[in-house]
Length: 257
Image 1 (cartoon, rainbow, N blue to C red):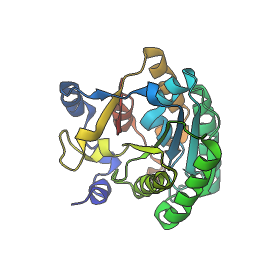
Image 2: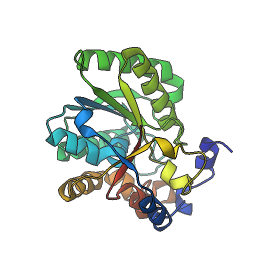
Image 3: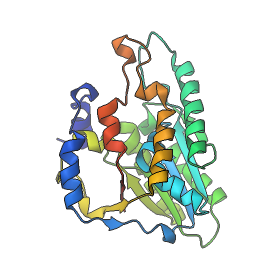
């Protein structure tokens, strides 16, 4: 069974792999630290508004505080997170998510994301265009001889938009020569400790300061359309209920190097 199938067959309401299952295993492994001092510029590519904060919000905030320029590229505006919602139309939802991510990135000390406006739920149908646009962004933004880190969602994260975004970022980096790194988001939901489908040998760890974790928590709290129900209707259920957030609000962040 591939990871996309595992993602589809592990509904959010089913809770996935609990954080109290992950924690004993994660703390038993000696992870190699992420060498942030080797980064001159950081470009974070997020398929939906919130993925960048959930996946590497603390890393972004720490880099920005250290004077490293951090740029966020939002691939979609997230209008398809609640299909069939009786409360918000896709356009209204997208506008709300844009406002949420603007506030969230500001709390992390990062400028407002560059928004590409590709269709939520169909990034794979625009993957070549996304790769080309990322090449343009990297060419316009990055300076010669800079050590640029491009962080995108993992190419095998399970969610199709996450996987397509990761592939497009990798393709763009193959053109520009920058280093691509991948951050998992939904993998923590459907995978298990020591899961053979995850390249754990490539995983690197970032352990932020306590005050940075507080800022990340505040940034995540801005995403009300995702962490809270839009209404009591089942179609308006929270996309990121507490058991999902528990896996993404740890005291460390892990990135595939």
